[in-house]
Amino acid sequence: MDKAKEKVQRFRAREQRILDAALELLLEHGEEKVTVEQIAERVDIGKGTIYKHFISKTEIYMRLLMDYEKSLTERLKSAVATAEQGDITAPARAYFESRMADPARDRLFQRLEEKIIALNLAPEMIAELHALRNSNASALNRVFERRMEQGVLKKVPAYYYYSTYWALVQGAVELYHSKSFADVIEDREGLMEFIMDVGVHIGDISGRRGAGQTQQEPSSHSTHNPSSTPGSSFG
Image 1 (cartoon, rainbow, N blue to C red):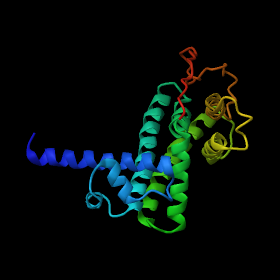
Image 2: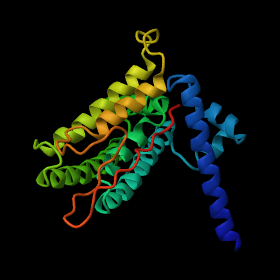
Image 3: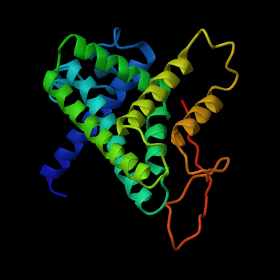
């Protein structure tokens, strides 16, 4: 490997360490208390080195938000392809598993985005984030529309499904952290699994769903072969 490529790799690796450290500190202390100095100390670099990668703390936060949304985008692309092969619940599972895998992180990112928007700190990056999110919503809406045409899902405006997905995740994340429900919920992970299962199968009118099973693509020349719905771990 030549020196130029090696330098670029070291630069990118250090940048990722900065992002990882920022996320760790945000989860530990909250966005109001984290400073650039703390991030630099966690990575064991000088404060000035941080600014070789990011112009501000807000840019670090926006990179965390964008990377999160890009990860979801990649999972949805793969899931849509899987749905075309027969597993029609794959996109829903990808959405719920991605967003509910770590409720603390998802809740943190919700707060960060709301505060950045409220203070109008990074309008161009926020616009880019929303464009990516809208693209994900459109991809899911196309899946919903096709399933409604096939008689698998109840016919409603497609955005009802995506909006319900969003509402379920938002509510689940808040419930996960709710002090009011702390004495009521004995198994938070089990509850998250249950909410996700409800979301994955919402609107199903095919009458073919079995307990703990996924549906397969309807076909005139194949038999239905259900498989277990994989779960996910929660933070």
